[in-house]
Image 1 (tube, protein in one colour):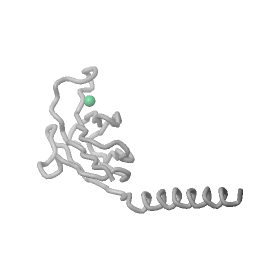
Image 2: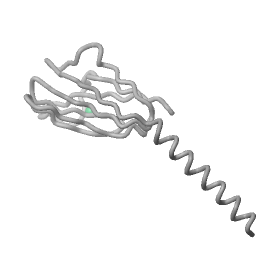
Image 3: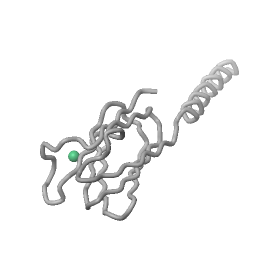
Image 4: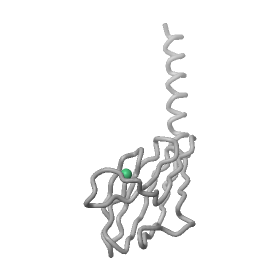
Length: 122
Ligand SMILES: [Cu+2]
């Protein structure tokens, strides 16, 4: 009986160690993005992070826009003259577009992606 308990304790210790390691690996990353005329500069059109990272996107825009991060399904309104943060933990891996949505149009048009978010597995 005590042997079973000891085995169980070992398994639990391993599980807790794994959680701690995963936690240590996760980074908190901030990206600063400025939208002008419905676009961001070329060098920030691809954002690459690792699964588990806490990602903060700090947006500015020359006009009022609605952002939609697909996959994670987060929408944010960015008003001119303000910094708007979009924060999330990158739990889902893959390539996800961030689109601009028209405030007066419902759902998705065939809008071009503003930015792509790539989340790589740990
Ligand atoms: Cu969308």
